[in-house]
Image (cartoon, rainbow, N blue to C red; front, side, top):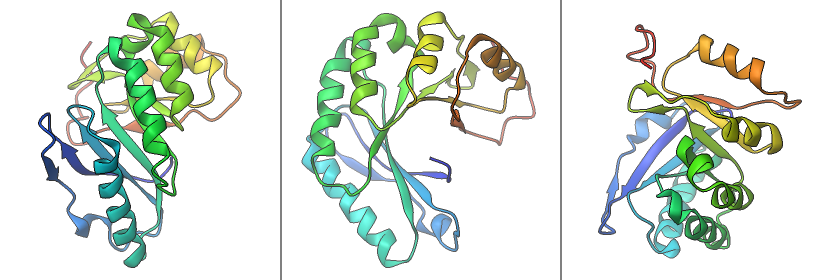
Length: 193
C-alpha cells in the first residue's frame, strides 16, 4: 500500500452515501492510488461493493491504476467479530483487489480475540496511532500484534520521529512496516500527547 489514498465517499449511519472524491486530484498520476470508503455503520456489503466496482471501472477507464481498497470504520471493540465477518462477505463480492482496513489502538486492548479475527479477515490493518490530532500511546498488545502479524501496520497524524524511534526500540520485526501519514498541513507543531 505505497501510493496515496483518496477518500471516495462515506456511508452515513442511516445508509445514505456521500461522495467526497475530487476526481481531478487523481488524474496525471504515474503511481498507483488507493481508494478509501468511510463507514459510520456497517452497511449491506452489496451497497459498498457496488460503489467500489463503479469506482474501479471509472479509474480503469481513465487510466488511473488503483492498487488497494481501504475501509475506514471505527467499529466498537465488542463488534469486531461482526466486522471481521462483514469483511469476509465484502471480499466475496469479487472486487478484484484485496480489502484492507484502518484500525484503532483500543481494539487490541479491549477485544484482542476480535482484533486477531479482523487481522485474519483483512489484507492489512493500519492502526491509527492518533485520535483527532493527538497521539495515542502504544501498549504491549499492539506491539505484539505488530511483531506477530505481517499485515499489521501503523498510521500517524504527522511524521513523529520520537514515536517511531520508540516503536523500533520496542518491536523486533524482519519485514517492511507500512507507515501512513494522515495529514501534513498542521505538522509544523510537535504532536500533542
